[in-house]
Amino acid sequence: MSKNKRITQWNPEDDKFWQQEGKKHATRNLWISVPTLMMAFIVWQIWSVVAVRLNDIGFNFTAEQLFTLAAVPGLVGATLRFFYTFAVGTFGGRNWTVFSTAILAIPAIGIGFAVQNPETPYSVMLLLAALCGLGGGNFSSSSANMSFFFPKKEKGTALGINGGLGNMGVSVVQFVTPLIIATGSLAFLGKGQQLTNGEVIWLHNAAFIWVVPIVILTIVAYFGMDNIPTAKQSVSDQFVVLKRKHTWVMTVLYVATFGSFIGYAAAFPLLLKAQFPEYLSVAFLGAFLAAAARPVGGWMSDKFGGAIVTAWVFISMISGSLGVIYFTNMEVFSGFLASFLLLFIASGIGSGSTFQMIPGIFPVKEAAPVLGITAAFAAYGSFFIPKLFGWSVESTGTPVNAFYIFIGLYVVSLVLNWYYYQRKVHSKDKEVAKAS
Image 1: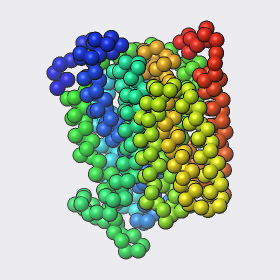
Image 2 (image 1 turned 90 degrees about the vertical axis):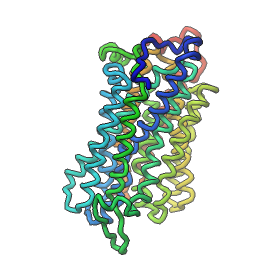
Image 3 (image 1 turned 180 degrees about the vertical axis):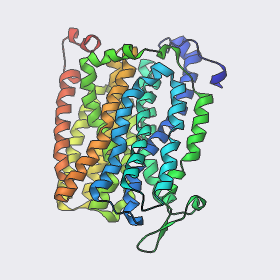
Image 4 (image 1 turned 90 degrees about the horizontal axis):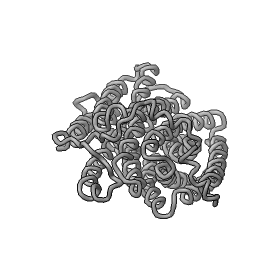
């Protein structure tokens, strides 16, 4: 295992080194990184499905409180990403992956016990939701870590695979939870909760089921991953990217793409329950398609260019938002679902295309912290989008008003992408990102 054979040099841009040694190490680390990141997303987004069933088993929370429980992990996770961004350069990629995976067991165990008692205070539920934010931080460190392993020509695809399959954790938890809570397979860990229709569910299964996989993945990461020596950077060296104009431009673009994906994924089950409750079983579909589309976005950008792919993404997201508004007002589920799935797919492709753009804009040492910083800001989408939906549904009965805000963001992002990265510029301006 790699723990017994420490990597002492790393230069993936050297074709000879890459083919003889680098590729096999990078591939192994990537395929361990993917399931650990997927598990982080599962824990991060577990409240998007648990919150939906709380009132069914005896809790008495308002719609606003439930949307808040789904949103708080996003707030904490986004904030932690700023710290996780610099963790790889400070502690090493393998070391941080082991630690950040192991601590996911804390909220998983806590939720499993808390949901069994309807008298559990809302404050305790909020604390557990906040602890799930630990999973949200992992994306920044994982992306930064993988960016060091691959040569520039393959970064888009590699980051797309890592992020896309990792993002799949959202759809996994939304698909598995309804199935696992319907079975008493983990009944020895707690008694079932009876619904008003007489049906019995085991909501604690939704959290307990992930504890053993967390332990296994922690062990696999410990023995199978590597620390890259060239990834070592002081925090002050990494902070230089905050002075770069293009750090902030790319942050806006990634907020509009990945921020939309993770925010919609957190809110979609609750939205369905509020608008079309009879179709709640399809809640996992949007996150699944968005996550599956992310590697496609990375690949398309490697082939056709990130800026042009990103432009079409924002056009599609504007169209999807207008569609959701129209079909929500018309109360037509098929159109509502199709428009929302367009939003999910476009946001997934855009998450891959914008991440592909960053390594091409910044030098290698700066690309990693920029990836982490943009991911940190974008993760706030998983807080603000459910909160905006909660406000809109609570005040008007529909999510329509929130979408007018999102359309404004997509229009601004489309213009920024065109101005800085898509339009034809003089050759001397093409290096602006390197120097700004």
